[in-house]
Length: 117
Image 1 (cartoon, rainbow, N blue to C red):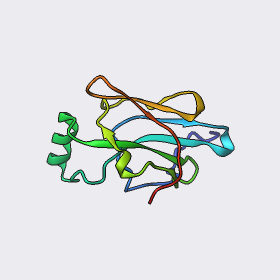
Image 2: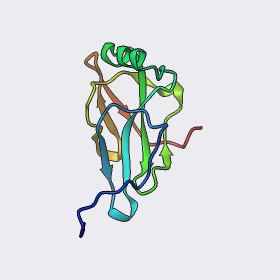
Image 3: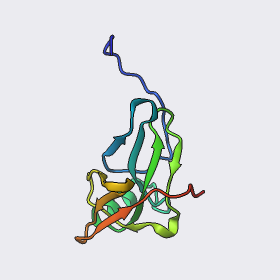
Image 4: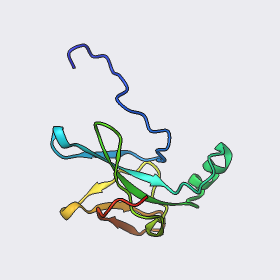
């Protein structure tokens, strides 16, 4: 903050998102919450773009340590939901719930659970 110079603190090449993220918690325990696209989606640019713009993909939410980028929580792949609106913000709710707005008019609720590998 004193110099105005920005530096990369961490990088996650495996991070799969098109959306904004939310930061929660006190400065010394900050958590980043973001969309996490199903890793089964092709990384080919044309295939990925087609899936994203058609809404033909599934996703979940990932909780990560904001200081290190380390995954704290991610629901199992069996809990992936249909796509949400591109560029939407994970909305924070009571009791740790995260709300995401679905492309079909649904609202998806995510709640922290044990880490799944």
